Length: 337
Image (cartoon, rainbow, N blue to C red; front, side, top):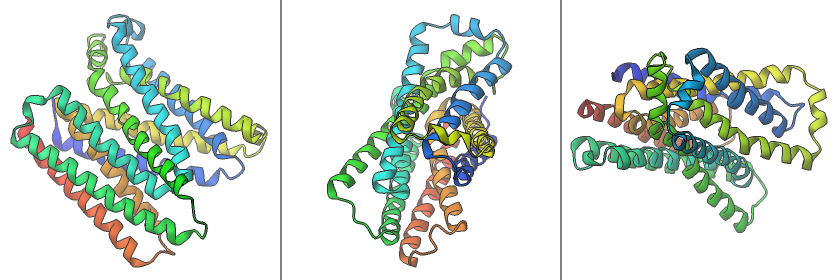
């Protein structure tokens, strides 16, 4: 049963948590990036999903045994696609900067992650007021992140003295596009993994926790590319020995995992509360809220301090467009009951 106001409120909390989860990483200075990301991967994509599914879903093995193996393989495939996106994102950030990569990835992910479930599951609503509202909101999301990308590029140009080659920038942009497409796989896993949630409900799981039956195979599969990439980096950079220092860093990585996995659980809960249209409405809302929160946190932490007012003005213009998209998506929910 859908609950639009509750779902929207849950999405806001999820967006804030997701945009904030990397903050502890700023204090893991005695570790290389791959050291922190490997521990985060183990906690966020393996330990927490397994423990949560085990605690919240009765007769867990029977749940997976009661659905077609193809459903589980499909969800795992989406998980691998999402995991590959995380690897692409890390490489793209190194090539074109955080702001530009972040905006491109979230914009493409928001639009594709919303449109594919709509075309697949709600095609009959395309030529309707609700369909037009969702398509219009997706267009606003793309416009908003495009403005944020322009502002981010201007900020990156102002803050660095070195000029990247055209080939390197082109590769970074291509990876960002691929990352945005692959990142949508997480939402596809939710949209097309509903037989798992139905089986979990039949086994006694509540409506809110039944989605954990999807998170477990989805995130376990997503952990594989991340683990492989981190191990590869540690071998190349000889950074395994860094685990001997910074004992508090383990706790910081665990906090990152709790924030990220918590935001993921809340997104799943919000999508469930929004009803059958949850994956269509919830994903672009989630992505937009992350961009808005990340921008606000960036301003508060001084990321734009050395930048002129013009790029910051463009950034806030993009955020304003995203806010309008959120209101349009919220209004469209009235026609989807």
